[in-house]
Image (cartoon, rainbow, N blue to C red; front, side, top):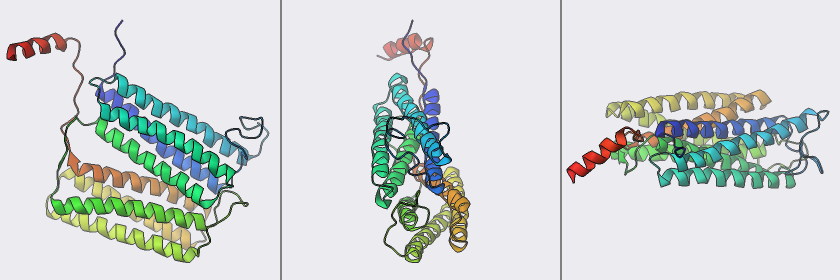
Amino acid sequence: MGRLTITPRAYRRITFVAALALAVIILTGAAVRLTGSGLGCPTWPQCEPGQLVAKPAAGYHQQIEFWNRAFTGIVSIAVMLAVLGSLVRRPRRSELTWLSVGLVAGVFAQAVLGGLVVKKVLAPPFVMGHFLLSIVLLWNAVLLHHRAGQAPGRSRPVVDGTLLHLGRAVFVLGCAAIVTGTVVTGTGPHAGDRRAARLDLHLTDVARVHGTTVMVFLGTVLSMLWLAYRRRAPALVRRRLGILLLVLVAQAAVGYTQYFTGVPVILVAVHVAGATAVFAATAALYLSLRERPTTEEAPSPRSQPALARNTLARA
């Protein structure tokens, strides 16, 4: 019986599942905050002292918080499979193993930070850090999935220097929009529990800073899209710019609507989902600016003897 191996294509499917799970848990975490269930389980890692799971008769706050924690188990399985898959993938590549190990380390850090969020009664800096670490993990997962679809070796730019610099600026501005958005959240009304403190900032001021950042972000994306068509950038780059522009415009529309309608819960939920989509689209665009050769496939058992004979013949 031979050793277990998987092909590069199969491994890339595993990395996609891991990235999807890490995106979904951002949304389940938002559901906890928006339903006021942040302290539904007042202790960690237990739900209540001496009780690991939520009681069937418990209120919906405890049920929501418990199932969000339980989904972390699914995420943990997905990232561990990414690590194990990188070890049995043929051909094996150390960069994929290190990227997948980064996911495991990040999920562990999230668990620790999640415990601190509860112990600090949803203090805004800890809640903001919890969300931002989720975004870092999502970037790690998107990068792993991207690299898993490429062969090893140095990448080369597929656009000119100006577009490459604009792409970097878009990525930085996308991250800045995420960070300023967490400041607005930490100042706004949806704290996750009525006992949670809020940042001692004026909501109008931080919303203005966030909105300005998004407008600069949007303007940079528009400039890059215009230049990409003018200089005939690769179709993939132009397509991903178009997707980012579409998602970003929709996200900005939701953001302004929620602000001027009293920040209703449903629109905040849509805005969190939109922020996740905007970051994923920004990351995908950034990674499309450089390329490596198409992914390698593991040689089949039948082809290995022929490959060996050809190698000996060339020698």
